Length: 196
Image (cartoon, rainbow, N blue to C red; front, side, top):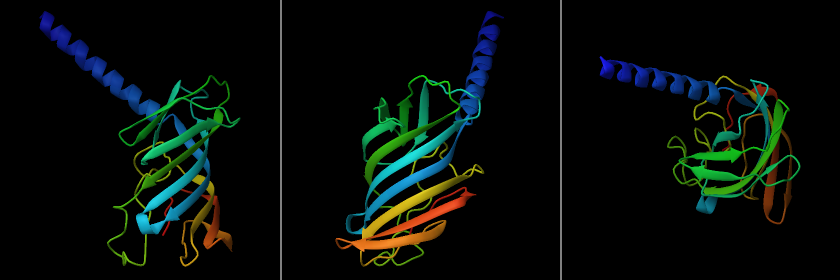
């Protein structure tokens, strides 16, 4: 009988822990991105600066934040005021320890770089096209595409022989130092971002 109670206690603890984890993962959303990417297609390298506007759905933030992001190296993680935040990188996630805030929203800026070899679409010519899609090349609060939507401003810099197509609307483009920058924006919230 004692073993039955122990087993039931363990079972209930697992259910509660799983529920808490699910609620935790759903308790925040990214409402807006300011993104800057430099793409170097010859070696599939991405150099990135991502600024996230994050809203807490519980009116308060936990002491740590889990962001899904695939990258080889994180250069820095800062808050809105430029203060360094403590972080660790593990299994496609960045864990960020937050300084206490009573606000229901905050802004975090991440600088990182990575090599994205496998994300060349097999539907297009790999020698002339390069696609960032269905990956965590930009920070997300979930590992899957969700129905949560966000607005964004994005600057994508590539060699001047390359054109860029992106989600949103093309605002402008400029060329200097043998590089071309494309500026896209979306005020109508999107649920997904792709670049090709």
